Image 1 (cartoon, rainbow, N blue to C red):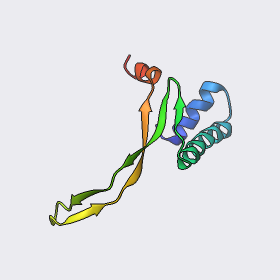
Image 2: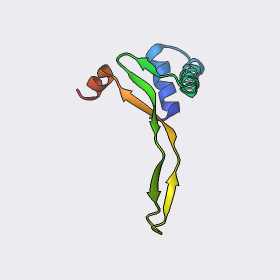
Image 3: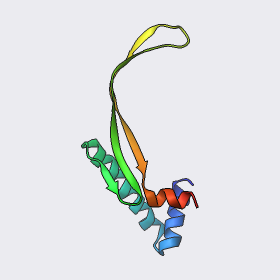
Image 4: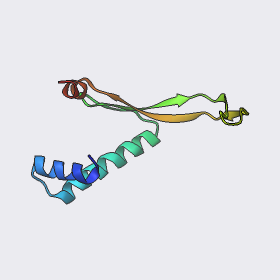
Length: 91
């Protein structure tokens, strides 16, 4: 389901307008992005946890040429699914 389909789903399920549903989605996503940018983890019990994994710098190689290259350290966003969401997906 793409964003527009999700907006329609929220509007139908909760009896709100599509504009209100879109604003809710945009508010949630921008808030998660902002919180993670500040280095915070977000825990929504039953849904899941948003966090950051720190990936260390390492030495790699180009598979096409075989030349060695340095891969810099970076932060990787992660989402760990919560029990309630996992259970619903595995009925």
